[in-house]
Image (cartoon, rainbow, N blue to C red):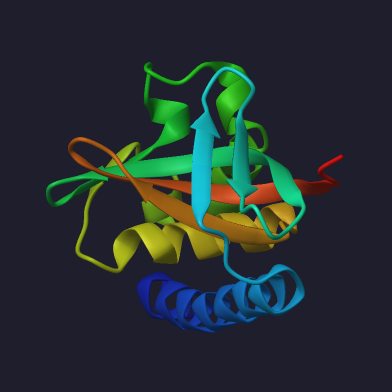
Length: 153
C-alpha cells in the first residue's frame, strides 16, 4: 500500500500546477480587473473595470487562513451552508483516499497551504478557477463555480 502522506503530496503538487493553468486561462480570457467585491450573502465574487464587462462569479468558499492555521469552511460556523457548496465532496474525497488533511477541520499551515487545499477543491469540484482575498486576520480562498459576463449598458 502506498504511503498516504507521500501520495497526497504528489497529488497536491500536480493539482497546484493544474490550478495555476486554470487561473492562467481565466486571465487570458478575461484579463485583469481593477476592482473586486465579495458578497457573502449572495456567495459571489464580482470583478469590475470601466473598460470591460463586469464578471459576476458564483463561488464556494474553500477555507480560510489565520496565522499559521487553515480552517475548512465545513468546520467554520461563521459560514452559512450555502457558502461552502460541494465542500462535503472534498471531505469525502479525503475520507475515501485516507487524506487526513482533507478531513481535519483545522490544520497547521504555511504560506502555501491555502492554495494547496484550494487546488484539491478545484479539482474535486471541477471548478473554473480560484481566488483568494485578504481578511482582517488572513485570507479567504474561493473556487469559481459559474462565471457570468454582465455587459455595461
